[in-house]
Image (tube, rainbow, N blue to C red; front, side):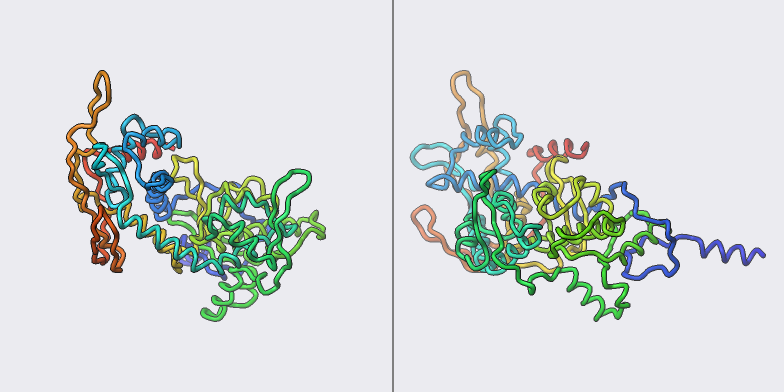
Length: 459
């Protein structure tokens, strides 16, 4: 009797929280369903990714300030006022000191005539910008296809131009995509103004059935061929991989198994003429919303996009109102990170596209953008930086910059694996390039980021 009791207790014991395959449990309960409210379980791999991108995002804003100048240089004294105008959260004289944290991106030097400190981009940063431009131009045909698929997912076959413009970087579109993509390919797109709202819209000229194939369908085919899974189990399933520490009970596992078998309409299918009042139709539309967000993330360059930009397409793609709660229901498919902007930014990742914080199938544009992140994370101690270059003294009459040395920062470009020559101060210099990436090692005297991180940890 004791042996039988021990055996039945082991049968009723829930399984461990391992990644769910397409097939799990044979006996199903008819009363189980995925709970609407789910607690967030953090995945530090994605959060650390956003912490590094937070620094990169600030550096990009400073880069745009410098590149917007005709001479591509800017006096150090102007950075404080410009940083406050952009709302970067710097106190007085902190913006200039912040530039010294990234000597592989910003070069601070003394102007030979004005005898004041100026800032310009280093040769490595300029080379990274050029590489990103080349990668963006090379993948332009793929960007056209992505835009066609994006517009095809809308209910009416049209999207607001402003919504696409805001998310142009995520979809790999150039800044002038209105002319270089939409107007350049009149056989694919049509641009028109709405009469009542006066908003510009992008309209698809003709729906291509060959493009109406979702990325998850290719994944299912690969799973079916490689792992030999049952066709009925794979037909409507998604890859599910919960974050570490996510508790999976027996009834939750059953609910996921049942949800995986629910059929749904394709994101590219027009459902405007369907009767959506029945319970079965509501289940199909809910799963269709998951497939739509999955396909939207698959069309992005880095397989991630902010939650706020997904919300721009909510009405056009029949997405639910409470997007954040909806995504937390499916933490095995998506991950919502609140890191990177003190809790104000929500970034949605496609979990199956990443492994250990890195994209599994990187593209050239993604790799070119990652170069800037590598430059940001390079240790400042590896660069020959004069710590007294940005030392300020407050005087009663005027702010004076003291301890200025006329030496220029010596910057090499050893991280890109190509030979590069650039004109610099009237002489031509050659640089031999090879990779030498190290982790970030911030100097003890520069604690600005640490104070900001303490604020974010409280969120």
